[in-house]
Amino acid sequence: MKTYEVTLEVNGKGRIYQPIAYFADTNGSESDVTLPWKKTVTVELTKAEQKIGYPVSIIPGAVRDSNRMLKPGRCRILVDGKEVATNDGGENTCKYTLK
Image (cartoon, rainbow, N blue to C red):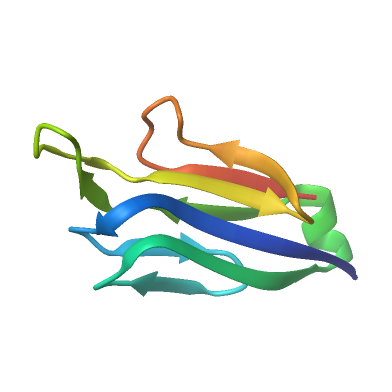
């Protein structure tokens, strides 16, 4: 088994207008969240998962921009303290494959 500490974050201020959905050690979602939001979990990979990879992801929900329009929240994924994925390019999802 190989173990990773995975941190999922959604940054910003205020409330989200759609739930945050994530897949890491388990699937889950959080609604009625005030930003910034953070969840840290431990993920253990079997030998098979290390070979084929194990996806972790976060859908950050929607926030209002300065024009009051909804847009994806800013998310990032850290593995063992190192940033491995962001959605700074405007994507709806942050995703990474552990190996």
